[in-house]
Image (cartoon, rainbow over all chains, first blue to last red; front, side, top):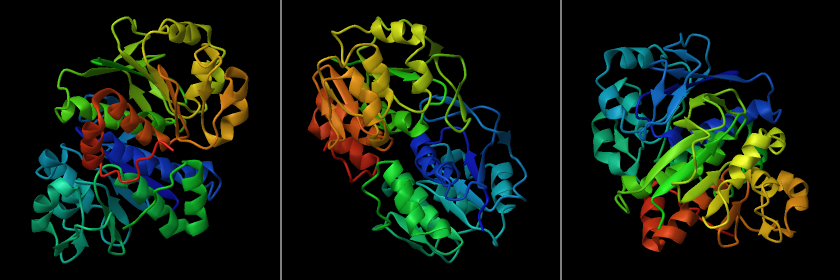
Length: 192
Length: 192
C-alpha cells in the first residue's frame, strides 16, 4: 500500500516532468481517493532552479527515504551532471529493490546509473534514447510508459501527466484514475 | 510582436495551470523559434505556495507590467480570495486593453473581476462555470480554449498545455506550435 510519496527535484530539471505527475498524485489525497496519502518534495539542495532558472524550495534535502513507499524522479538537462554525482546516485541506490520507483523523461538515466534498469526494458525522452541504451536491456521507443513491475519509466515531458495517472491506476485502481483525470480535464490519457 | 511574457503566480495556485503553459512558451526561445523572447515569473509575494504548500520564488513581486507583451494568469483555489484583493485586481487592470492576456482554469475569475470579460465569451474549470457567469456575456462549456482576440481563456488544469501551444501558434505560427508540441511529446493538442 502506498501512503508516502517522495518526489525528487534537482537543479536544471524540466519542471513539467515533475508537475505533470505531481498534479495527478497529489489528488489521490486531495480528492479523497485515500486521504491518508502524503507526499514530500525532496531536493538535492535547499533551492532548486529549473532549466530556465525558476526557483523552488523543496520540503527537505536528501531526506531519508526509509519511510516512503513510492519514489518519483523527473528528468531535465540536470540529469547529465547528476549521473556522475556520487551522493545523488548513492541516495537513489538507498531506495533498494523492494519498493516501486518511477521516472519521467531523462529521469530514467538516473535510475539507469543507479542500476535499476539492468536487464530491463525502459524508455525516456525521444532525444535521449541513445543515452539510455547503456543502462538497460532494451530501450522501448514506441510507448509512453514502460512498466517493469517495481520500475516504471515514462517518455518525455508531457508523458508526466500519463505517468501520474498510470501510477494512480496501478496503485489505487481505474476509477481513481478516471476521477482524477476528469478533475484535471485531461482527455488524452495513454500509456501507449 | 511578443518578446516579453509575464507569468503571474499567487498563493494557492494550481501549479500545473501555470507550468503547462510555461513549458510551451519558454520553448519559443529555448528551441530557437524566436531566441529574443524573454519571460518573467511575477508573484503577488516573494514566496508563493501552491495548493499543496509547494513553495516557489518568483523573479519579482508586482513588477511593473509596462514592458511586457503577453500576460499569463493561472488558476487555483487562491483565486477565490484574490478576486477581492484590491492590489491584485488593480495590478491586473494596469495591463489595459491593448495587449493580449490569457488565463487557465479559474484564472478567468481574476480576468473577469478586473473587467476584461465584460460582454465577452469565456471559459474556466468545469467546476467553476457558475462562478464565472457574473463576469462575462457567455460561459462556453464545451471548448478548452475561447479566443476573444486580446483575451484568451482556457479550461481546467491540463488545458494549460493546450493554451500554451495555442498561444505559440497564435503568435509564432503553426510550425512553431508543432515543433514545440513534438519536443514536449504532447500528442493530444486541442483547442476544442
